[in-house]
Length: 142
Image 1 (tube, one colour):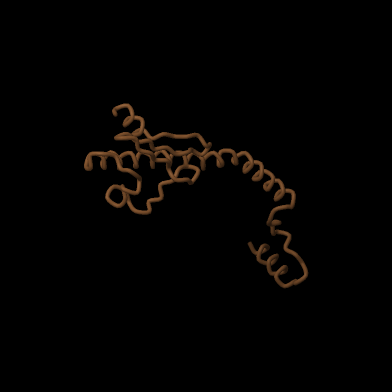
Image 2 (cartoon, rainbow, N blue to C red; image 1 turned 90 degrees about the horizontal axis):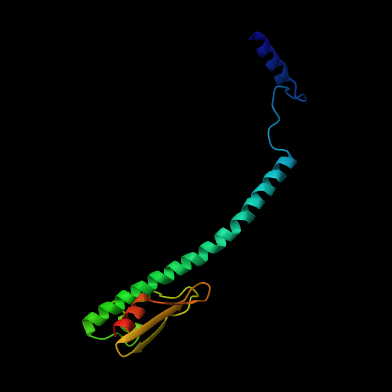
């Protein structure tokens, strides 16, 4: 114990000398480059999964919006006796104003009325036309 204290005091007084007991702290350049390369490879492998997640989310939102509009149209039909002439007739009693219902391509839904039947369609992220379930049910029941 006394030897350690003497040794520390000897090094404490000398300004230009380094303490040989200290470890070299930090990373070498090779280690930093290796970690950077590993992170880059992992990020490259994850990119396809991340890109697909956006289109899946837009397609899910499209299906939910179509279902919401179908429910609003069905409620309107029960109360008014016919389907609305346009989707604007559903505001504000059946859907919230400025709800922003758009398809996956960020375009307005296509809505058309034929008698007591309607067609409500939109495009998914790949550009395919998606028809609401209420449109199909309304056309087959009509």
